[in-house]
Length: 209
Image (cartoon, rainbow, N blue to C red; front, side, top):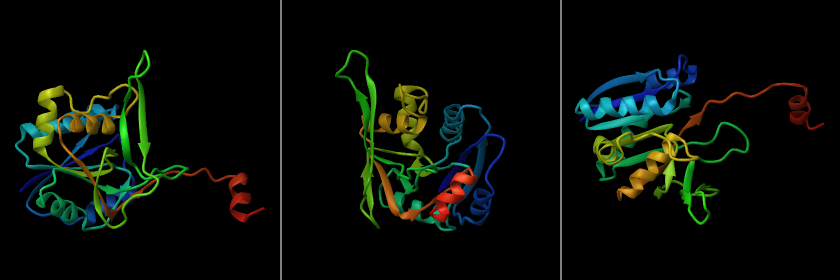
C-alpha cells in the first residue's frame, strides 16, 4: 500500500505537531509532502494532484496544528481496510466555545433569492464508535485516492471553496453529491493546538474572583 502523507502549511508548524509526526508509526510505502501556499485550498489542490498523478493508493491529510498518538496511521488504515473510503479522527475547535469539528448537516439554503450556507455541528456523538457524518474538518483524515480522482473529474479542483464554506466542508459536499460517505472514528482522539491570550481578565476569571 502506497500512502502520501499530505501536510498543507504556511512557513511554520507547531512543536506538538512535529513531535507527533516524528513519533507516528507507518507501514507500507510512505512519502511526506508539504505545500506552502498562502491559501489552504490551493495547497490542498496541489497535494491532491500530487496524490492522483503520482499513483498513490491513499492520502493521510494532516494539519500542522494537530497533536496525535503514535497509532494514528494504523487506526485510520484499519478503518479503510474494512471498506470505508474516507475517515476522520475526532478533534475540536481551538477556541471557545469548544465544539467537535464534525457536522450533522452541511449545504446551501436555496429557499431565498440568494443561497446562504447552512451547517450544523454535532453537540453529542456516538462515543467509542465509527459513524457517518455530513462533513468534517481535515485535521487528520485518511482517504482512498480514488475519491480525489472522482471529485477532480467532476469538479476540476477538489478543494476550491463553495460559497460560505471552507475548503474541507466544500470537499465533503462534493463527495456526498457523488454518493461517497464521510466517516468519523470517535475512538481516535486528537489535540488541536491553539493560542490563548493571558491577561488580567483571564487571571481573575481562572481565580474565580
